[in-house]
Length: 111
Image 1 (cartoon, rainbow, N blue to C red):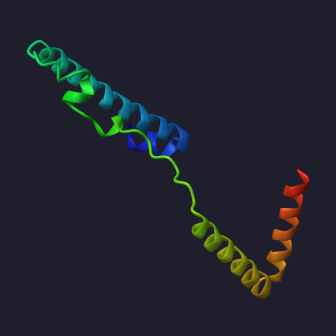
Image 2: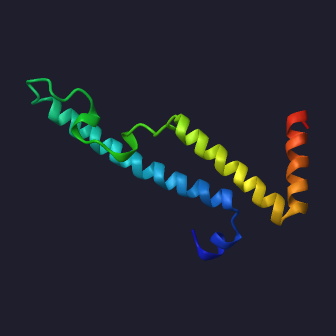
Image 3: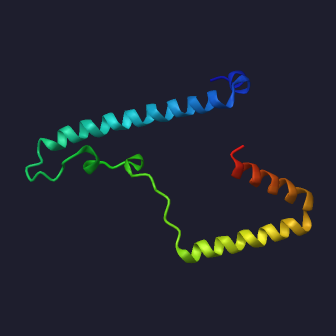
């Protein structure tokens, strides 16, 4: 990609190009891992290697992290923080506070 193409591209196009490059990189390493797996499997008499990831794990093999559950103490701390932030907003920025109240009301009414 030339500099001119870069500056005339949209953000989504650049992101797609980066993703394509990353996938090409991963595919090359996946092929390498599979070839190594097939070669190692021929001499694996104790059946220790069950899948290619056992031989050569990659960072993208790891499961994605999930959100942890919030404890009761953390929930109380968040609610306390939320109330304090509301009071500060109400006191120092009454115009913005009115807009926030209106937006909350609309959200509750399904608008």
